[in-house]
Length: 329
Ligand SMILES: Cc1cc2nc3c(=O)[nH]c(=O)nc-3n(C[C@H](O)[C@H](O)[C@H](O)COP(=O)(O)O)c2cc1C
Image 1 (cartoon, rainbow, N blue to C red):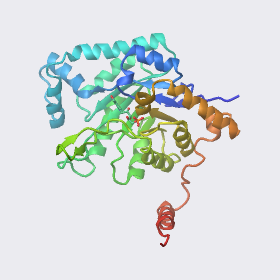
Image 2 (cartoon, rainbow, N blue to C red; image 1 turned 180 degrees about the vertical axis):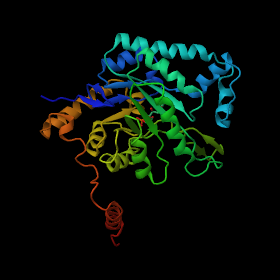
Image 3 (cartoon, helix red, strand yellow; image 1 turned 90 degrees about the horizontal axis):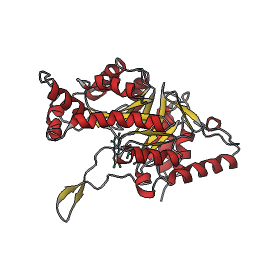
Image 4 (cartoon, rainbow, N blue to C red; image 1 turned 60 degrees about the vertical axis):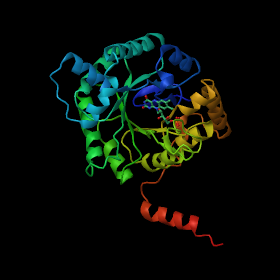
């Protein structure tokens, strides 16, 4: 008898596949369909911190904003009724919890710890099982100082933890220097989970029209190597659960992520591409593979191919690199 259930961030999931935050997770109808197709948990489409701060500013005009990016990006919401957006978000959580048994994880896309964290209390009161913070600090800003973005991660976690007790995960950028030590230290904060990685807006160039285009909204099935490598390196070091995100399009990659040490995977692009029925196929193929390998639970094999913490990693990787590229001819 195969058992796919597991704990992620202290929550019980029937299987390790999470519907990642996207336009597919912003309505009750879709979330019911995801549940019917056997998803393990759902992360709701993100609210932006600017939406919360815009509402505050409209109702309490005396707040002064310190963050230039936040001030400029709030213009986007100038003609939108953000109060309705916030109310609908909270109702969506409550309605999901009334109708469904799967964990519902709310999501906020944030860049600062200013003003908005109070709203997480309302998210908790509405019944969310957890909160994912999509921390989207633009590391390409030439005005940023060394460590400025990572310091903001700490501030955001601390600010949010003052307001809520439900588990929180952070969805993070792959663009850090000293990524292993940076993420290991971050995992020692009060977070319960870390999602590797956030997919950033990645512009391309149309050489015929000579202009920038947004052609990489969805991942491709070859995009999984960066999260796979990082999960493998971090899994025995991290002090919180790890979830893999980006490029997980099939059961083979799902199994690779679990072998590397992920507790769960987040998927979005493949649901856009293949529909919600794809969840059933991934689960069935995971079960079949487990049967073939005589594993009855996820914990029987999770992390068995993660990196050993006791060997000299720098030297080990260098030797592997040399072996890989040193073929003559
Ligand atoms: C259309 C679309 C909308 C998305 N919206 C959000 C969002 O609101 N919040 C968020 O954290 N991630 C969002 N994402 C990112 C996904 O949650 C996911 O992390 C990313 O697409 C990588 O996973 P994938 O390779 O399975 O697509 C979105 C992705 C897509 C394709």
